[in-house]
Structure formats: structure tokens, C-alpha cells
Image 1 (spheres, rainbow, N blue to C red):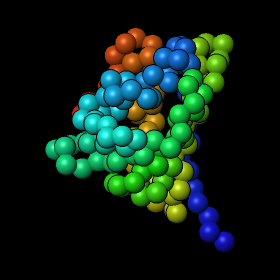
Image 2: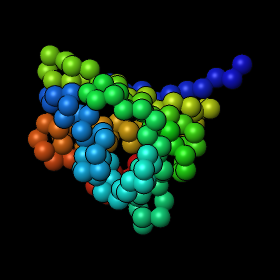
Image 3: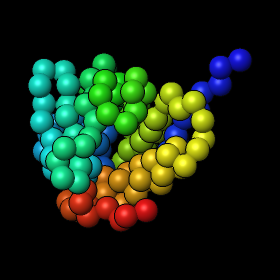
Length: 143
């Protein structure tokens, strides 16, 4: 049996599904909560961290306005892993379900990434949407 694992997070935001979708699908939005070192080439978004040489290239596989965004890592630390952002209306604004799928084990790197996704979602994306100020890389803590 080939078991795979996924990082999963759920977050409510006091912002519209449209605002959340925009933060997940535009260079300005992504740069404001994940990393400002970003470039887009067709359906590929290149995210860079640290010295600008390391990062991940994500192929955008699906976008459904105000509902869903799906990426697949085509180069970087998460080869062929999928990233699913599901958006739904909520009484407070919107709810985000995030899944980072395709892990073969729950080792140290899995745990590190789980912590980092929790930070970027709750301490950067959420404040960006609710107060206009995210805390993207390099403002993230060294964990």
C-alpha cells in the first residue's frame, strides 16, 4: 500500500471570497503574503526565497474564480506535489481550506512546511486581507 500524507489548514477571514481569490492568483497578491520574489511565465509562477536562487516553480492547473486554485510544483522542493486552495463564502467573509498533497512521509521537512504554511496563511495572508498588511518572506520567522 502506497500511503501519502497532506498538510491541511482551515482559516476564516473577514474578507470576501473575491478578495481571497485575488490574493491567491495575482502577482501583487502573492507577493504581499508569501514572497515578493515572484515572476510569472505563462501558466508557471516562480517563487524565490532567501538569496533569490532557491524556490519553487508552480504550474497553475486550475482556477475557478472565488472557489478554487490548484498548483503543481514542477521544480523545487516539492516535486509533483499539489497545492489546493478551496474558497467558500462564510458568515464572517470567506473560509479557506488549504491542502498540500503528495507527501510520502511525515518527517522533519513535512513538519517544517506545515509550520511555515500555518505562519504564511494565519500570520501573513489573513492580516493582508483583514488589515491590508501581510508579512511575506523575509519577514517570516526562522523555524
